[in-house]
Image: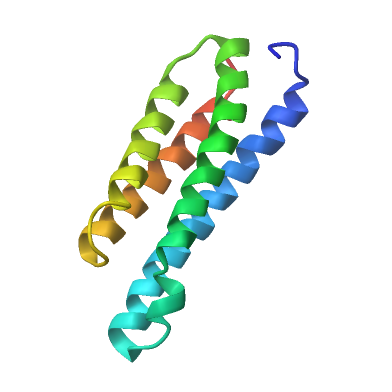
Amino acid sequence: MASCPPSIRHRLDRLGVMLSALCAVHCVAGVVVVAVLGLGGGLLLAPEIHRYGLAAATLIAGLAIGLGTMRHRRRLPLLVATAGLSCMAVALFVGHGVEEAVLTVAGVFLVALGHLLNLRPA
């Protein structure tokens, strides 16, 4: 797997950054829409969305950052992304609200940063 073409890894890293951005927008927009308008709480804040998002983030980060770590031997992207995935996982266990939003947004920021660090040339 270490011989995987950089273009595949780069695409996965870019997908990871995009997924992180979409997750952050969903989280912030969900809290705002529910708090301000009182609409869509059942759909926007459904736990399934967060579990599926965490599963997708873990899979993409595992592949992209794992391949990158094997190729460039830098651990920082892996450590940063792991911290972000951990924040996202903890967010699943706190109630809906500010704590969940803060943990999720911090987590997706760290995962996106891990992907960006992974894209940097050695």
